[in-house]
Amino acid sequence: MTELADRLPPRLGAIVKAMVAIKLNISAAATLVLPATFLLVVIFRYILHSDLFAYEEWLLPVSFWLYFLASGVGSYEDSQIRADILESFFKSPRAIWWRKVILYSVECSISLVMVYWGYLMIENDVLSYPFWQKTIAMKIPFFVPHLGIFVGLVFMAFYGLLHLYVLLRFGPKVIEEDLLAKARDMEAV
Image (cartoon, rainbow, N blue to C red; front, top):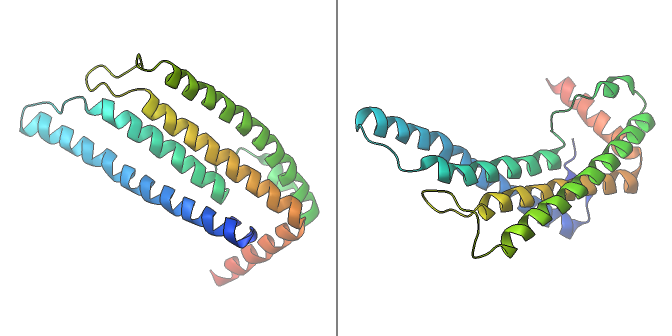
């Protein structure tokens, strides 16, 4: 299947590919940090009979950034989990295209509302400086995980809008190309 960035204007496509690569690298690093931390917790607790100081406090921002950056990548790849029973009822490329246009229109509307709420959350954090809410032990401002939420929501809305743009620009031809590519992939297996 053709990647979303390949259907965009060349400069925008290159920027989008670079952004996705950066998010994937950050997500890969964060994915390694989580189990490594829990391994250290086990070593400290059961071998060294000590405690790893406030590990849950610095894992919180890492987890939020990981989750929301990966959600952005899922939006880019259109690989989010959906409970979409209607998908199996549409067979013609035109009907599939209409369903996707409606789906992305609703998704983008919801995403933009979520981005606005995320903005309000960040604005509230910034305006409360220097009296930010902070974690108890390490004094990490809640702004750090909140920023991860906001950035992830922005990427989800951005990629949803790009999908909608591609659908509207190329019409049902996009679906036909995807169906042909999927059929070729199935034959290769």
